[in-house]
Length: 430
Image (cartoon, rainbow, N blue to C red; front, side, top):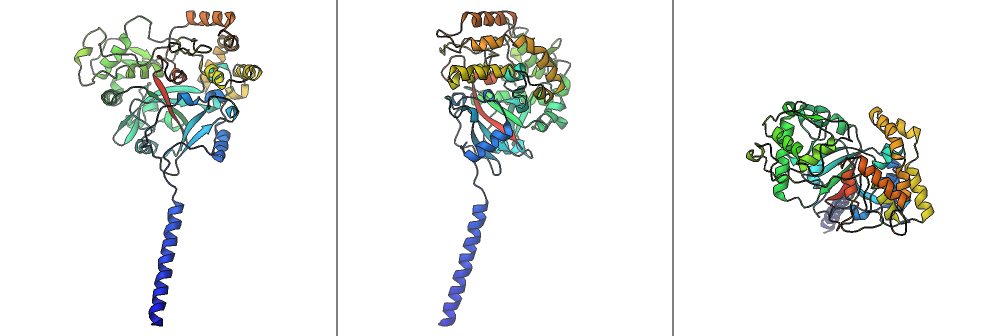
């Protein structure tokens, strides 16, 4: 009897030990992240790592609704980052940050459900923050690509259509020199894309990636002049027709040079066009299925101080809208607005040679915008001087779709008739 009790006791202890070990193992395996959660410690760590000015973040109203199926596998994590400089202000200014490892990024992003076909990938340079008027007004955004889902990975399509952006063998799996040397991406989602439209976009993107050697740079080349868009208000979108013809192997006459965000704008404007049907593009007339994804922007808009459903944002309005949303006292607001236009030589040195030259060249052209910024807060909206500065810029500069324009569009109020984009999240790559 005593022997039986001893065996029973031993079995109980062994079982309890096994359960304890199992519990430790379970506790040591972090649960998958399924939503963006605010945490004071994580927030402080991110603030120290990012070192971005508050106007590089966005208000909560910019955010896209997210499906409940999103899931990141540890140690990847999801943080609801609230910018420290806006904690006492209005607007809930911050970022949804998905902190992710670089190895296997394309495959893990695919499994996470965070990215969908047609999402816009904005390259962000946090080191631009505070460097001067040009990088600040660009909100740190330097490049635009488009994502699509294929073969268990998030793929990218970018112009230049070369291996620097599409990667070795044109695999386009976020493994190119460009994507391997950045550490921050904003994900912007066009509104109202249907499953059929996403399928079309996947088809178009696949065509361009598989035929990149033939298309680039003989039919589509890279245009480094971001102030020379092909879009002209009231004119046919013949350059989008050319893009489609190139992807369909129709060898259109001539060459169209496009900057990165212009190519993405053109590609998304083909969302209603079936890439398996070539007939609509055999004519010089623009196919009826072509439809702009977003209205190209003027330099300045009329959104600040009005907020009508018909108000629109401008290419230079990003930081201005963010600061307005904060509803700061006038002296704090003007001090923050002034900081946007102060050049920091040390910050400029952190930029690439090409971007540094652009920033230096654009500084005198951007300086009048400080008066426009500060003059936008009159009792009846922008004052006379601000309106005149706005008029001068809009008359001199053509409507455009810069890389930052997609992010700026998300800053419009959710029910604004011109809003066609939502901010999904920011990928911080470690």
